[in-house]
Image (cartoon, rainbow, N blue to C red):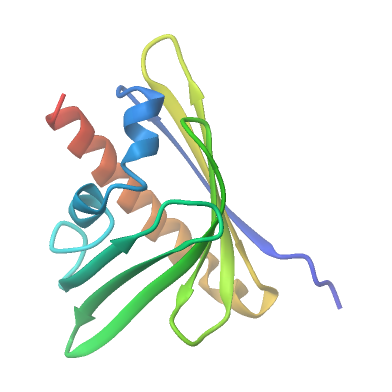
Length: 147
């Protein structure tokens, strides 16, 4: 049996600087505008908590269809503005690993997101890719709109 994780990869170019794109992953006010909420799906944001230090954690609590879902993770690497690595999961369940690599360009930057899913979650790879693609698309729109 192959224990290698299933990798989902999303690449997105931004007109914003590497620093602005990186910071949007750690700023609760920005996270609430592009990762969760009505711009993405029908849900209510209950709490966005971020302790942006290696070894510390985050918690993004939302309500969808009367169910509370707490997205949680721990920061494994924080190398502003080039790399962010964290675990990702729902409270009281197994977690996966997300790596954000940001490469500066002459104008803007390019983000590569790699989400490593356990083999047991392979059936969710397409949905995971669509979700991240949608979220980073909303992030690009938000950063473009705010200059």
